[in-house]
Image (tube, rainbow, N blue to C red; front, side, top):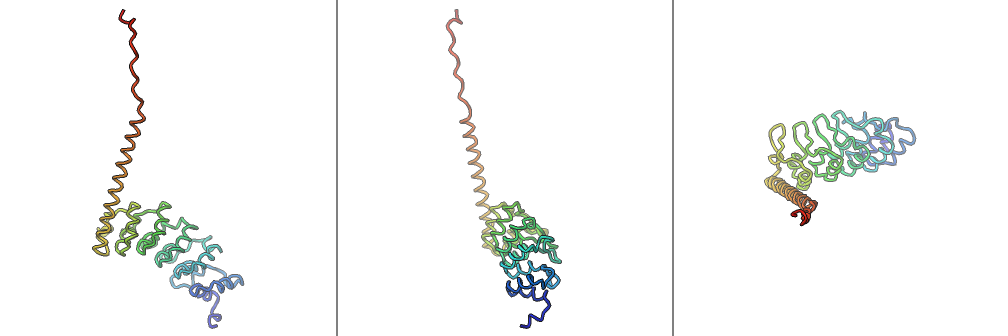
Length: 241
């Protein structure tokens, strides 16, 4: 019962960590807390929603979003981190997707280190998040402050499926970061190095084959579209009289 001696903002904060949504709702319904963002209580400067994302409290996240947590101001901390960044960093893929569906404008935000949701997702192999961002016109080669792309992150963290996904979506394996290193040179292992090279080559050959097929089909259609030559008219014998 010791927690009931805490001020309401601290109780609210602890309820998120403990995944106690009933206490959370009670505090709100009984007007025990004025600001549901409650960011001043957290040492990181995180809002309630950012804290819930960090601990993977999906039900609480959905509750706070529906309550209008982000309607006035999109949550950021002192370093410029957002909910998608936090949820991707801590591998909370479902929460990241729920948030992005509601606030897609945050997908390419960067923090003070140039970090972004797609780079954290690449590091942690969150392929559904990466797919969502790229399906919504995100940048597959988005760089952080050191010039690293998502492919650099996936390669150095040994994320095989993520590397393949990024390459399929036109990630460039030979882009160099600010230190002059490519994603291949950042490969976690010799196996990852080989995986990147072979996957990139396979995709390149597949595209070339597709382009050749498309060109061949174009020529074929063009040849069928050309009308047959008009046969010459019969010359009247009267012309020779």
